Length: 98
Image (cartoon, rainbow, N blue to C red):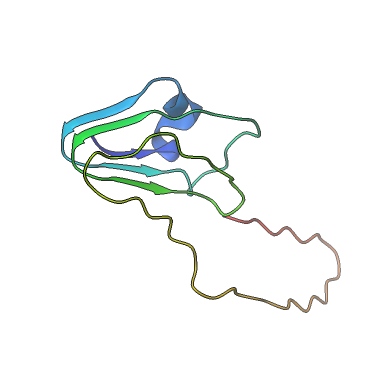
């Protein structure tokens, strides 16, 4: 019940279903890197909503739905484009998509 984060649970977050009888479930997968692979995450909220936060590089599918309530995927309204101008000397450049 409550907030579940890969930062706190690590990859064990995928090991067992996350369940809440009364109260919503919030899952934050955006705050830490996820090891490459395919995963299944079972979420069961009897009374209360489910919020999931994903990094932009994760693709997903949804199986099932709520008996009462909608299902929304919130994508940014406008694409964002950033042009980086790099003048580096010694050292690399790392860009991470979160």
